[in-house]
Image (cartoon, rainbow, N blue to C red; front, top):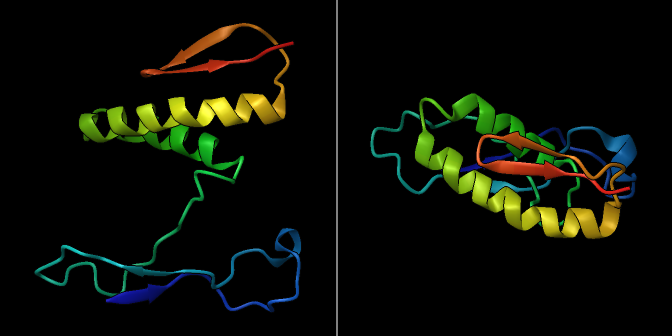
Length: 108
């Protein structure tokens, strides 16, 4: 089943001013019971959205005990994302803070 995400918005408005709007269709591949029919989903662009990294870190912390393999996979994804975040953002300090298996590093 395909599910639309968000609220319809105008195509000409800038993303910063739009809030939540219809942008993607999501199709669940494995739901034989139909339990997830009608569920809403929120999509993160892991390649371009600088806020996706923080969202993944929060999700890792939240799911670590119940879904450790998922948390590990997401931690690995965060490690890959750090490369473009640090290249583009130039963070402020050189300290490392360990969060689960993911390291948050900042530079001067």
